[in-house]
Image (cartoon, rainbow, N blue to C red; front, side, top):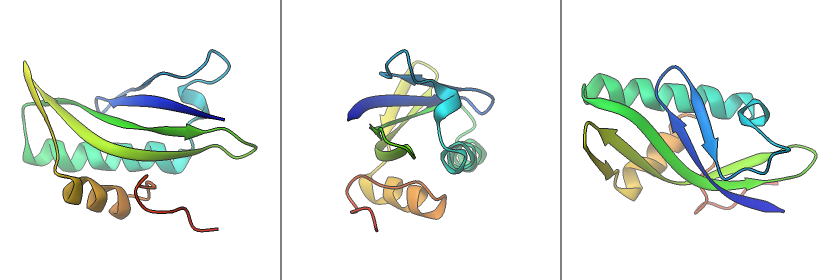
Length: 106
């Protein structure tokens, strides 16, 4: 079973939209939380006006949940933009977040 989700990180909190009631932010794997916080810190250091980072992805349910990311949206004031796929893929890879377009290793 999979769920299409949006993960919003503002540097302090993480919110996930699109999960069923039985799952919550508390179920997000620790490696993902750390990766999101690192990505937010990296981006905030370069774009001072960023208010949050939103990652679209898929939550794969199972005994060990897995989350794969699609893209990164940056919200800066009233405006926002997607990072180029190559930049998003590098940020995901450098911070331990599986990228949906790269097959999971077994």
